[in-house]
Length: 318
Image 1 (cartoon, rainbow, N blue to C red):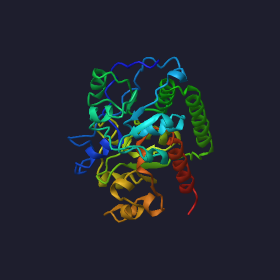
Image 2: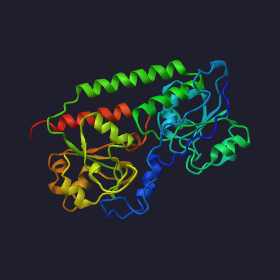
Image 3: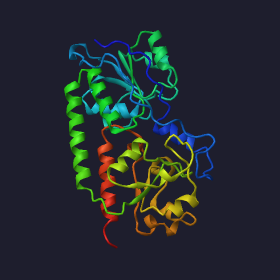
Image 4: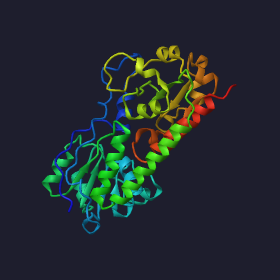
């Protein structure tokens, strides 16, 4: 049976909260802003009662997900039919949009959650004390903090499989993801001189270095991240400035602020001084999907494939 889990390690970062913090800064410094984004992703939480798969007969039937990443995971392992409500940002897959979605994962209301009579609530980082509130009213919950590595993603998929009675499906998904990622890595050309990249979280030049989840994906393809040269303790998410980026002259620019902020290859090329950057000159400013870039679910495979394709295009002689 599923039992209430103890309170998990506090998770202070998620894609949307990071962007919200970043947008309040002026972008003038190459080191982190005084009010920096929430701390980098902690280690994956040890979840009790998930080491042995839940008997499907005892699996939860009314799940509320307050995390877009975990909503994607739940559908991917075949637990979508067990969902009764999701948070306001859970917009994938399309079936998620058919569920009630007026709940907040950032400012959760325990009464609103309880109204759905859930037998399991899935949280993407309990940084508000929601777990204690759910404990107080006898509702089971599971917490999956923001992943720091791909192994964290795999572990969370397997844990969700265990608590939802979908262990076989979860194991199959993880195995397929690993196979797909290995194939992408094997098929990606790694030049003798690594290509450099700049990953943009928002137009004030917050970025992610190689110690972060998204940074690990770039490293898997042999890319050199210009953010690794930023000084100061940024928790993996330094705020650069235009001069730093132009001087670093990245070969590739990946925009993860196309939806939130309307950034495009054209707007980047129009920035003062950016016209000389190699990525801009060569047409290697890549417009990514913000949602996929900020989530650590099954679609990381799609993200890595898009990065690989961009690398191959960048290596084609002009």
